[in-house]
Image 1 (spheres, rainbow, N blue to C red):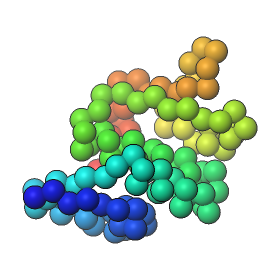
Image 2 (image 1 turned 60 degrees about the horizontal axis):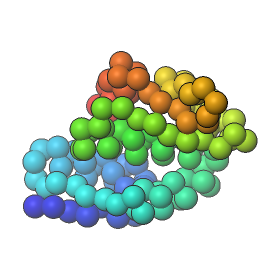
Image 3 (image 1 turned 120 degrees about the vertical axis):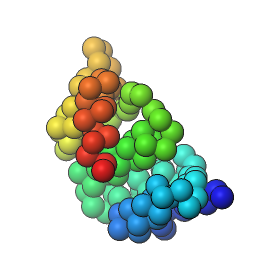
Image 4 (image 1 turned 180 degrees about the horizontal axis):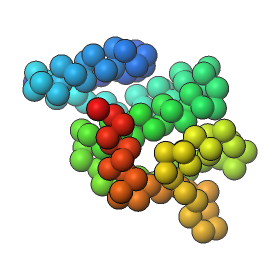
Length: 116
């Protein structure tokens, strides 16, 4: 069975973790869209730049677990220094001449370990 998880159950964290825990038991396959993830990002704005960055990292971990992603690339606005600092603490680094940050394979595995 497939279940669409809307923003209201992906955010806040407790509901998301509870539903994904049930999904990990094989009860259902969770689905969401890029638009739902974007809505989650907008909702996290009220938590400040670090809240937005954390929501982005959590969304990436969802993709890693459920879609078997192997690496991540993300863009961060130049003026968003708090978000950049947050991502750098996770292991992302700037690419030459760009504001795109990529987490290498080892860092990605480390990040996925934080999701359990």
